[in-house]
Length: 403
Image (cartoon, rainbow, N blue to C red):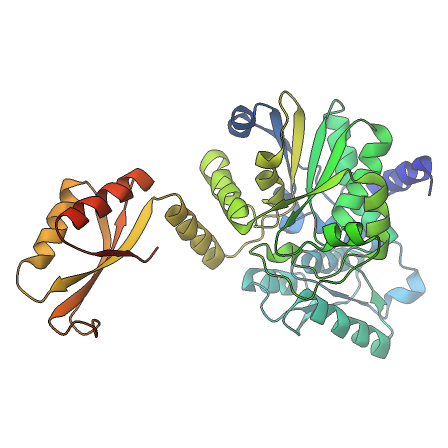
């Protein structure tokens, strides 16, 4: 397909989505701009209807289903956000939707999908398991399958994000886009590179799910044996053939980030921007530190904000421990009066605030006359932790860090 055909197709999608989706804000980040030496903006699809970009592609595809086919309904597979996009699009269009989701899908995404009127089937451990089940369901029922990413109209719908970014910021230098199956990055890249060929478009993948990077390197769609990442929204073993083709033609490269990079980006978005973004959505922010550039105009696409509070709590606690703001340690104490007071005095003198304390006579099996004390304290960083450990060691205690 030629450049002009692509831009026309995405323009058609934009017209179709007018009044259905929001043109989400492009927010300037003073913190990340100062931190990186660039002008950094966020395309906030976490504020989109359903909390993610997926409504764009789902509605654009489903709005073009022939009238005589709508009665049989649609079926799809999704780790969460595409499910909600299909469900809401179906509700708007008056089509019955069935969504197959992995068993481990966060409850917030399952309930949100049901709230739009869709039927939810939980099947399999991963998206790919759910996908195969959805194909079997489609074959048995004759419903229309709505692919989450490897579909021309779905990709075109996602490409409207690129159109909105370029219209708001035509001088853009670098665009960072999360990658799961590749529909988002391929749709955005085809439009942006056509309108502004000098703009660099990079996909961002977690180290535990490098399906696009591996496929590009191998020159063909390559299925990963396993995926493991905190970014459940992009935990895809295999990208699409169409998205791979477009990525090879229009995407300038794939940046990889670790789960710790994602966690740090997640926490910084909360602290500095008061925004809760799901882990997959934070990929493009995590990638900022991987760029060796200065004085560039950069947009990170925040692809979604659907994250359950249990995961938020876990991310915050792990992030605090990694930053040295929470320290949990254990020490063995002689089973004599006054030992707990000694530890408490050290912590008080060093201004470490005790969060939790477990003084257990029955947990030390190695030394019969000793008890195990496990303490969790609030700290001011790794230097503060080192001071606590050093002081306790000087006092004769052997400290074991728990986290």
